[in-house]
Image (cartoon, rainbow, N blue to C red; front, side):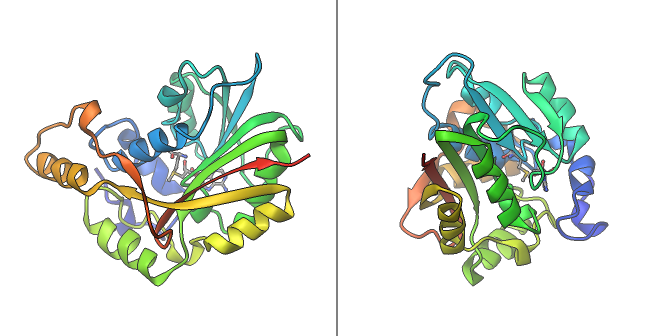
Amino acid sequence: MRDAGLSLPRNDPRQYDDLAGEWWRPDGAFAMLHWLARARAALVPPAARPGALLVDLGCGAGLLAPHLVGKGYRHVGVDLTRSALIQAADHGVTVVNGDATAVPLADGCADVVAAGELLEHVPDWRAAVAQACRLLRPGGLLVLDTLNDTALSRLVAVRIAERLPTVPRGIHDPRLFVDDRELVAECARHGVDLRVRGVRPAVPGLLRWLLRRARGIGTPPDQVPRIVPTASAAVLYQGHGVRDG
Ligand SMILES: C[S@@+](CC[C@H](N)C(=O)[O-])C[C@H]1O[C@@H](n2cnc3c(N)ncnc32)[C@H](O)[C@@H]1O
């Protein structure tokens, strides 16, 4: 695997092209995205009506898709990165090559909008939040996870995590991390009452995964680390909230 962080600026979207072969490798550079996708999908209830639409902003290669099976949604993914969208389409996602800050979909079209590990990559995250809320129908659900704008987050998610095989080097620009209180306020401005909670990988599972990976042993899908709630939202947090009206 080429280390994107050595050759491109932090958060340069071309890193996702360099890392295209990693998306669906269970022990690859995007392994933690799989764990987070499962935890995000757990916040999504079964569709309440036939033809319900879930819009997945910054869908990447569609890692959310397997966790939505049986829930009854049409899964539409929006992303800047074509090489990722090709893989998302292979996993049943209807793909739109576009920017999360200017989504070419109609107001109120979505029963659910997901934004997993997206906002911390978008220089104008407020514009992406505005789009997410605009896309939601009244009563629709926003689910997201992102990295908080704290010194602890910069330490854990960049300085430490980028030395582990759980986060590619250079993938984050910590200047873009998203303060949870500002995010809640921004969602409220757009009619979504967002509730946030801190999450993290469960430590025993993470240590087992790191050990197995270091020994070159794959981890069975039912034994990959679980993402669990944690008392503090200072590093990684999930948000979910319903659009009013
Ligand atoms: C960390 S990945 C997360 C992918 C996916 N949500 C997941 O959890 O597996 C971030 C994704 O956001 C996409 N992205 C970054 N900025 C974007 C933007 N402004 N509009 C749309 N997609 C964007 C990248 O191309 C990448 O696929």
